[in-house]
Each structure stands twice: as structure tokens, then as C-alpha cells.
Length: 74
Image (cartoon, rainbow, N blue to C red; front, top):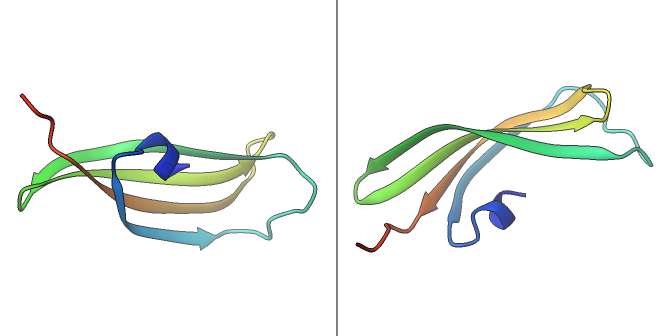
């Protein structure tokens, strides 16, 4: 999901916590939200919270991600 959304970015870190057993043969949703954007040491970094839920909103996995993006050209 993250590399599809940020195709020019580099996934630098990903952490995940399994809160429940992930069921089989059930539609699952991978979602995320950008929580912070910073420039540090010449890199543009995006921090996200990511989740894996079912259609009812039950959360099975939650985590965080750090993505480095190339600087925009003027």
C-alpha cells in the first residue's frame, strides 16, 4: 500500500503490532494516514500510521511507517 501510494519514495522503516489474529477468507482493508512531514538531514520524510481492518472496523494490525521522498524540483 505504501509503495503504491508513494511510488517515488523509499520505505525506510515499518513497524507493526498484531492486535488480533487475522482471519482467513475475509475482505481486509489496508489504510493509513499521514501524521507528520519533515525535512531532516536533506531528506523529505513522511510519517504514517497504518492499519489493517475488516469491513466492520475491527483492527487486526496497527503500525507506523517512515517514507523518504525526493525533493521537488523548482
